[in-house]
Length: 351
Ligand code: NAD
Ligand code: TYD
Image (cartoon, rainbow, N blue to C red):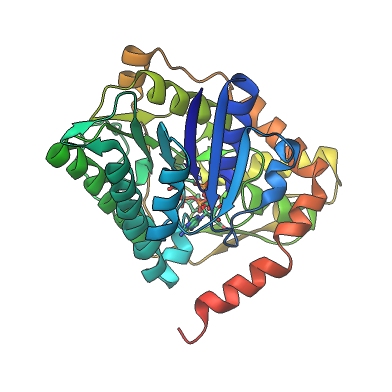
């Protein structure tokens, strides 16, 4: 039986990953370490609340003694580090917490794993540390070309700078101590349980309530969208088959300008919710500072080496996603109410 220490497992991708893994494997145990910031929601994991294979621990990844204690208590085989501050706009308003969680937190996770797994100069067998990174560490593309694993890191936002910095520490632990690590760099995910500060759930929520749809700049910035379950499948494959020290880009060649995404959501909600929902809700607002123009992943390495390919076409995935948010209005109400606002107030207090 393998034991996974999943950090950030109450967030969007982390909770989807836990559900994916528990559904796929009967003989695993997942320790879910999450600080439950505004972005973490245990309701995402309601369906596995009573499952003995899922053990939730509320903890900060920066907590040295706490994380060390978990390694002592459980014989952990895999660390999957999702925990992060993940929103670019927040990183522009308040960069420090991105350094704390994304950089210092990652280094703490690496240190604790190293302490548990490196004994008398030898690494215990079958262990792996997987860092969940992002295509944003590569910076911005022009009209042509794709990010490969050889593309130099060139982050622009405080968020992507913190993720790139974390990636460098992960590789440094491999190069210096021989730690068995992998890094995945995935493109933008969409699907159930994404916090409605991000483009797709925000637009669905606003449109549903006939509120304006704030499109940054000209709306022609391009993101490469992947259905979250396809990302989960890639992570599982990298854990099982990734060569230590390797980086794997994950993406499904699904580039779309933001305005196309917004218009797709409007068209769906126009038909499914209210004929009064139309493109007059679109409001072009001031552009994001340092806004990356285009992301595009070349997924050839993970396809060739591990046999990964995306299973959900965007046309199906976006309909499934919209239907999920429409059917889960309570979830949306819950995450946009009390605790989120409290956290937000605290975060910006005095800044
Ligand atoms: P999210 O913001 O939805 O969830 C983050 C989770 O981490 C939350 O549950 C939160 O409570 C937890 N967390 C935050 N700070 C913590 C701390 N100090 N200690 C413990 N837990 C903490 O993020 P997400 O969209 O699920 O992203 C997960 C990971 O995937 C991140 O590392 C992100 O950089 C990466 N990623 C995201 C995308 C995307 O499109 N969302 C794409 C590629 C990579
Ligand atoms: P986001 O979901 O924040 O992801 P990321 O910045 O990590 O790619 O944003 C996706 C794109 O949508 C990005 O180009 C910014 C844009 N955007 C808007 O135009 N309006 C919005 O309200 C939001 C949140 C994002």
